[in-house]
Every structure is written in structure tokens, then in C-alpha cells.
Image (cartoon, rainbow, N blue to C red; front, side, top):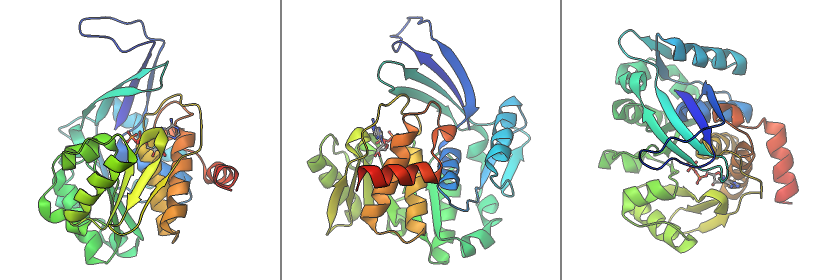
Length: 298
Ligand code: ADP
């Protein structure tokens, strides 16, 4: 996915034209943002993805090269465009509004996923989100479980998933809005997060992490619960905060960190990312994250 991001003094209301300050065209997309964050955090990342034969595809190819990300399992569509997102960022608050077009991402099939089967056998963690076809998400989750691997599902952008998938998910990581979509419980406070997380545990998920923006991350496995606050930072652009969080979480869990340490690492990864503009390229390198973890959580 490529992000087309407009920075604006305020969000336009219906029919209004606002004079923005800048348009940024850069690599984005949840899968790519998470892969980049995980790689920068020190993970050895293999991504399964698909793009179009268009000018936006060049933006992504260039990004993979710059980041040293493997392109072994990236296929190119003849018939569809590269996925893209139109993003508006309010310069005052750093908040965003996004329209996503999945395009080639939606063409990822079970066969594409199975083409990477040897990686599933070798990996520690399978991390996925819902910006590709449900067929590919489901195939990946089942393949990871075939090899007894840990599955993290970041259920974003929200869409319904088959009921039988929940019991194969080791960690589900919705934000407040996604947690509400899945459970019908509005999530504003820690108590709401506990209720929504309990509802997800009842669906069969083993561990639930609800990200709560600047309040941090709420965790439960049905018996133990904890809330871990993120380091205090000045948010400039919150696009991709959840993605940086998931990339950091995946690496920490792959390295065998306990859940509290993993949440601290994920929070610090995401907190640094909101101080930078953009999404994929806003993720910090491991050293920077480790320094913030030591400084803030000492
Ligand atoms: P999403 O980007 O999916 O909407 P959140 O807004 O919940 O996700 O943010 C994900 C994570 O990013 C949070 O759990 C937190 O670690 C970090 N984060 C988000 N906003 C801030 C902020 N203003 N200050 C510090 N950390 C933040």
C-alpha cells in the first residue's frame, strides 16, 4: 500500500475546501508498516504481499530496497492497481482520517500464502492484519498453526472474520474502535477495555491486547490483566501508531519477552513513531526504542 497523506490545519467539513500545507507520497499499508517496524526493531521479516504494475508500485519497491526487506513473496498483478490510502492529518492534533483502497492486496490467495510454506515452518511469529483478502488471512493463520507457531492478528481495518478463526489466534490487537466493532462494547476507559477483552476471550482468543492511544495498551488472558502506559511524547502524526506497536510486539514476543516487557517495547516503538511524520518510515530503529524503554520504564 502507498499512503497519499495531506497535512491540513483542520479537517474539512462536507463541501469545504481547505488549503493544506503538504502532500506526502510514501510507503504505507498495515502489512508493510508492521513489517518495516519489525525489521527496524531487529526482526528477520518475510512478507507476503501483492502490488500493481503502476507508479505507486515503484514507491513500494524503492522502500523494500531501502529497508533491505525481502521481496521473495511479493507478487505483481496484471489487472489491478497497487493498494493505496488517502490520509488527512490534522496538524493541530496529529489525528488522522483515512480511506483505504485494497486493490491488489485483495488478490492475495491461499495459493500465494502456501507458496511461502517453508517460512511458516521456520518462523517464530505469524503477524497479519485485515488489509488483504480474508482468504489469505485465514490461510496464513491455519498454516502457522499447522507448525505450532504464535499468531498475532491486528484486526484492522475492521471487518468480520469467520467465527472459527478466533480459537486459532494467540494475540488479537484491536484499537478501541475495532474492539467495539467486534464486541459491541464502546471502549473509552480501562474498565471498558476489560469488558471488551473478556468478550474476545469468550470467542476463543488466547490473549487480548487493546491499544488505547496515549493511554497505552490493555492486556488480558482471562486471568491476568494489566495496563501499560506509553512514554510521554509530543504526537505529530499518529498514522501507523498501531502498526509500529504490532511490529514491536511481534519482535519482543519472538525473542521470548514476558508480556509486560513486550508491551513496554511495543509502546515505546509506537510512541517514537507518532513523533515522526508518515507511517512505515516513522518506525524507530531498535537502539532508539531500547533507550526510551530504559529511560521511561526504569
Ligand atoms: P491505532 O493507530 O491503531 O489507532 P492507537 O491509537 O491505539 O492505535 O495507538 C497504538 C499505540 O501507539 C498505543 O497503544 C501507544 O503505545 C502508541 N500511541 C498512540 N498515540 C500515542 C501518543 N499520543 N503518545 C504516546 N504513545 C502513543
